[in-house]
Length: 580
Ligand SMILES: [Zn+2]
Image (cartoon, rainbow, N blue to C red; front, side, top):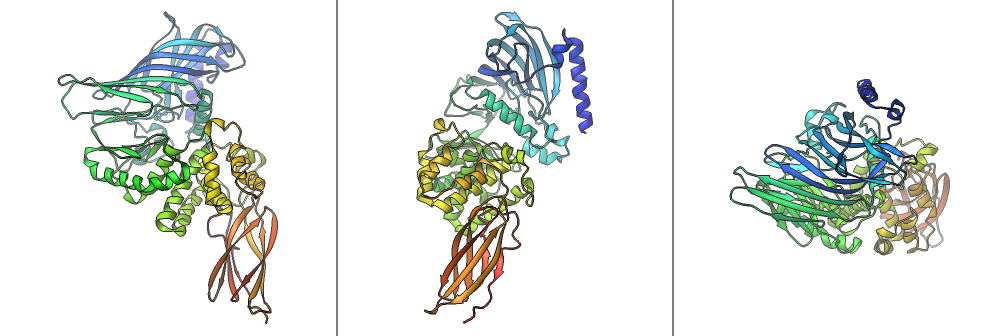
């Protein structure tokens, strides 16, 4: 498989070399030399024909250190480049397919454009562009690495069609131009790395996107759903012809990935959320908004008032995987209603709070799910939920090994592009912080956070430290700035003595053999109930504590599941009967 793909890559380089005037330049083709700093595009959507046609103007900026005469522009392989001009002058360009998993088709239509003159480093050039084609359901990038067809289509559900249209941006469908190196799903985090690099390069880009839709045939009234906060939607229906237009201006410090959906949607609108439902899903839409309204007070209490209204878009196939873009969520409303509450809590958190850093943005949104579960069903239910994320973590982190030094940096929460880490691990980190400093202090730190002031990875840790007397530097170093692996606790010894006044004094020595320290809850059981003591044990060290109890201690259980540990076989300890 890998061999076949490599071969096609070399083949395309070869074709390109024959076509290029300069072979030397061809081999130094730098796909990420230019960033697109301004998009001004008009997209025409024709659901009956599955078609998309785009015309517009983009500005390229040379982000490389060398002057560039060649620019690379890419769109989905199901779209064709029609023209590329600078001013009124049509530019020479070579079309070629470029295998990359950044698009659902597993390939891009690449235009290798010869610019009218070299663009100096930091210099810019405006181009007029036109491309068109179809966007149909296509899961090639997943099926070719062995995913079963059904599972692949449940993930890559983007399409333009008469009954249902939903198109996400790069990472799913490159329906607007991008310029990226190859992303390969069979090579670890390659796709996430390419996407993260692309988003970082284009952060702050100006985006003006117009989407027009027309439909001449009879049929239900279509609704165009786009980001309401940044777009204005207008209808110009005449007779049988439906015409809808949306004009969007995105002003965001990060890059906004524009998306759109079209179907015969109804909607349910409440204070915290609008749900767009397919006509057959009116009842589950009500269930969803009810769940959101129920979660809303808790989310407000932790993350402040909503900055925007959450919006949920229904997907027709109940097996489709949900997908989120900030406070927007695509989800099949017909799917399992048990998960609706935690989905709503997550979505509302994004509507209230945002951060350019994934471990904060997504970590807190997942943390809010545990808060919601704790409110609804108690701490145990929240810890069980954390447990389900821990298995995802086990899959990406070798539990027993200490991270290699480059992984310590690359896989740290501040740097990682790995979803399991910035979602599941970050969620555990927020839960541990809350256990260590308390609800009130953590809420204050979250309230003090301003995304536009987050210029340094230590900004959030400093806000948290400011709310507590405790030294947390070791904790941030083990869990946030570095990946020091996980703790591994062991009760080294525990013995009880009867005191003069008839109570019992238990002395516990807890050892942490792992690379990361933590404060861990320790449950001490006796014949008449149990007590919990929290014990801080730094990495590769021991802590001894004494606990006075009214009855003789019998058993010690370390870690209630709130601290992600590399292994837990030494976590239960039988205490010998005290000598009297
Ligand atoms: Zn999220």
